Length: 381
Image (cartoon, rainbow, N blue to C red; front, side):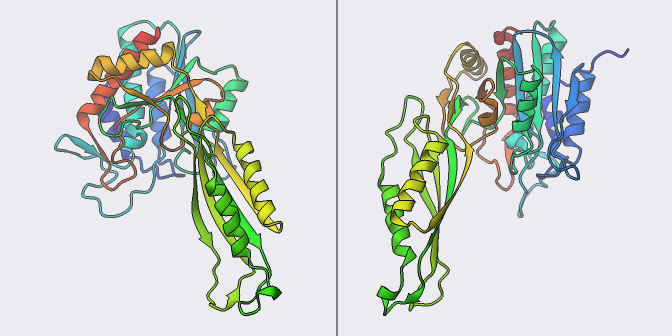
């Protein structure tokens, strides 16, 4: 039997991953590449495709060791489209002036590569006392229907839920060591359609203007202060994102009017509670209306404790900076993981994620690898 292979260089692995053009929902070999690397390290890899039979989403779960403590690194291999106008080929993984360029290096192939390199260094240097695992999805940048959510549910059904999960999203706004995410706001979208009676503007008594009813409902919705914020969360925010009638005429009262809104809400609320409130307000102002609600995630919080403290200290050990514990920003796959175990997020600097010429400083890949390694040591593995 051959001895394990330990890929301890995060830069080389990140470059290999970038060269896989895994623009969601495509994979282009990214998952197979990672799975092969982990199998050579001694991991047992279980491929978990979910979704339509003709085009399932690639995901996998890899584990080494048994028992506690149990730590899982989570991440995704899919990336957003590169767009036009790059100075460096988005899939060539070029290094120029100390920066590694490529679509997905910040979000988040770099973070995945650092976690694997850190695990490799750990396993190469000492015996493992507990369990290390990786949850890797190919559906984070897309609809996220067949990625982390069904995988973590599969883990729960098979008794594989870890004690703690570290998601390598690019949490740092400007410099490595800025921010650890210990929660995220919930997010919901509402699409409101108000029906009226079309008519001539000169004879309003023969019509029913749906715009007036819609504006009245929106005025009440936007006029409410949802909350003043909580210990770890900023105040919830309702934002109207569209008001649309599609009426080309100046002398016609339209038959219907539509609006869309989004609420980013903290742990004072639930999506269901806010949905009920929206429907109640709209129905009072416009009985003949329809409200469609889509809740993409509930607010969640991992209260600071031993694991988060270990991560804070690991960041400070390597960078010399004490990171801020934060819950801001958009949603992430941590919203699914949080339903089953404690989770925090820490990764590379995200200043260029989703942008043209996405890049990170090469030195930060080494620093993040050292942070992950130090965290594993402090975690007690």
